[in-house]
Image (cartoon, rainbow, N blue to C red; front, top):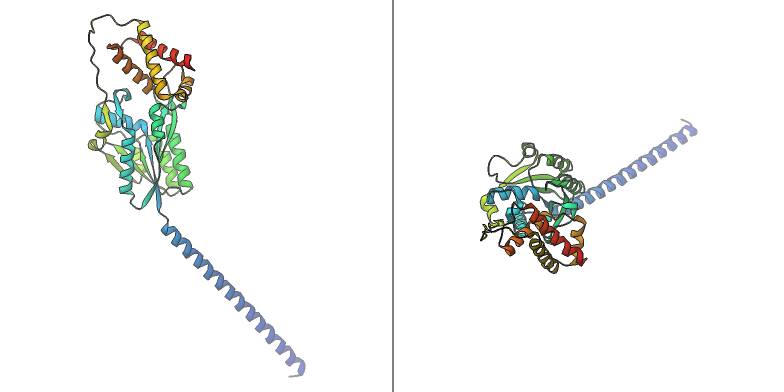
Length: 320
């Protein structure tokens, strides 16, 4: 072997050694990065493990009024009974604390209908409760809710998509809620259907029952404390002629003065856009109070009830 061959062999060996060192350095660097990545993942998993899961309660108020009213008071007509919404919401929250023991409450969503989406006094009181958000759909001429199901779907899907909740307790029964359940489940949330015992048959759609992750029914004893049937007022001298339109209109103005003094001009400003219509609960309270003052029933006297509303509105508009 000549000197040139010896030189070439030495050079080749040096190159190979350099390449090997480079590969080892690269492997060491990759190993360090993998170790660092594993460390970060372990820290992240530890943080996730320490973060409590979150739940929210979604209440279809129309379903609750109809189902609880029929079960306890024997009627779905809201005008015939009072619902202690605050007490019922607190009962739902307590039940959720028991079921989702390691979870924290995000909030309660209360979905209801109102004419032109203007809060009634009852809905405003519910909205002022802690951890409660009121969402309003529309109320048509037949007092039917419109748009509530889409509101529920929007909230359920949005909260699930942003991982704001891990569990959703849905109090309702309409088949239209199936799409809301599917949307939330698609983002990994579990949906638990809560219902109220049916007075007869079923008050929840089968398709909804099939789709949810679990089901729970609240029976009569649970609902009874929160539903009170309004007393049927007895009136004397029913054989006498009914009061005049002017007399009834005057009583309507009297009630309006009391209503305004108790609720203030802000509530009046919210009520005015709905004229000449009154929200169902306000109209019912007006009728009950007028019958008390007159000691006469106005049921079946459509003209007198119109006069009553006219007097009520006339006084309110005069004060605006």
